[in-house]
Image (cartoon, rainbow, N blue to C red):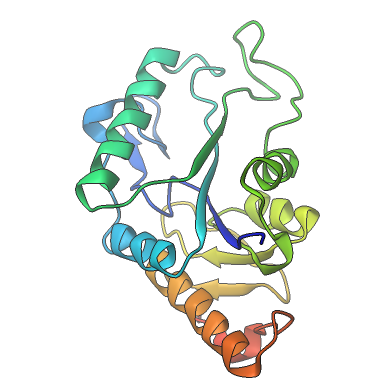
Length: 212
């Protein structure tokens, strides 16, 4: 039987974004020592995993393509992220990073790419690898590209607030204050589905919207 999944953006959802004075930008961590989990993120991920959701990370990581850091540093950031989750007993079932950028400056990592959000390519690949039921799956992100990716792939989107990099929430999309609130929405929907004996139940933004 296929599994439901929660597709997760990383920075601004699970991990704190960092302000770098040298660039004047708030962005994904560029060094492993800068990685901090957002409050409640590990507990929320654990609750979803315990409810038999597969956890799949989908993240655009274009810092190398833009010449801001090395690929090695980006991998060390990832390892630090995984280690912090492991301390809390959380394991991500699959990880998909896109390291390219349309306006990048590094050879082979610049220009259009199939796997970059908002494209749904990695959602489809994950579904094939993990035997996922996309109709029962969700995507939690903090950017409009996350929402567009979810909609293109046929999964239910939730937009979490990011005060440092606010995004416009499209009409009809559920909002949440943070990942913990988004996880609560997903789990409430699962309980409602079980109570109705149907996997076709859809939670509407009017019922479960956590954003002001």
